[in-house]
Image (cartoon, rainbow, N blue to C red; front, top):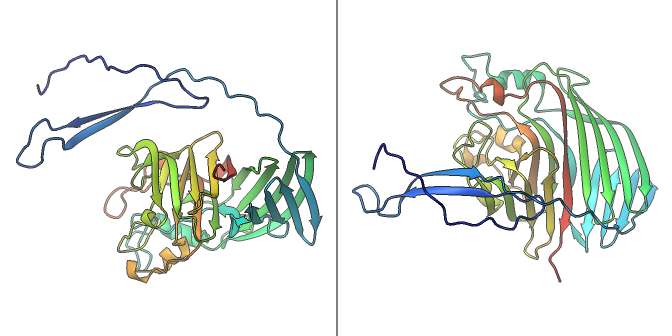
Length: 363
């Protein structure tokens, strides 16, 4: 009865947990009988609890296949069993990645600190009555138009099965010639995996929209699966109503058509995600230490920023994949308080890494 408590014993047994596994208990409350406003079975509330079952240690990784390294003409080519990766040393990023003849990347990962501003960030096409909006500061700092300049690239075969590429990049904005210093270590191993370690120093004097990497896959990688919060978009200050789970969608279904185009479709607390084509070939990304945020879209942040109505945005064929160490919260500054301090991204140092690996269906 309302206002009373009871103790329940759940008829579940401890599952056999895999290495690195997690367990959650989802409790859902539904109507037992029809009412004037909803039928029996209608869900009125839910809660999710992490269950700390013991988890075994991961098995040691066995010997990996060897890789070959060839350099020349501003490109380092790493080839292995069924894969080839080309690294453009002038651009400081992967320029080509193929697995079994399928191209996985249209453009390689670069530092990304910009998002299409939300209405809460500020009104992008009209003078704002509040000069303290985040968008005002972001545009003054030039975060929407940064330039990447590669300072140095070191390519080394560190083992028969491993190549390391160390890249130092200066990212210039309108406010500062050294707005961001990006030290990146790209490790390519014989299993075809790419580990991208990032050390970012943000020297700007404004809060940041996001800190992460952005890349593009060719069109056709439409199947999106993720293990994190969902199924709807969620942000650090808008995630309590989304449960951790395994979700699947298409890239097109991820777009949220706000009348004023803006940032959309983000996912928080993501453990891993994958993008695959109709043949089941694609890319899997795993957060190494901390959980990541991620989004996929056919609409670029620049395209969303330019448009003033959702019918003006142009869908591109390529798939944009944003992998974020963190993205700023949304706040409520359209008509209320700004983003709370704990959901802001201050200038300073950021370290994070992602592991990318090809997905190939079992024969």
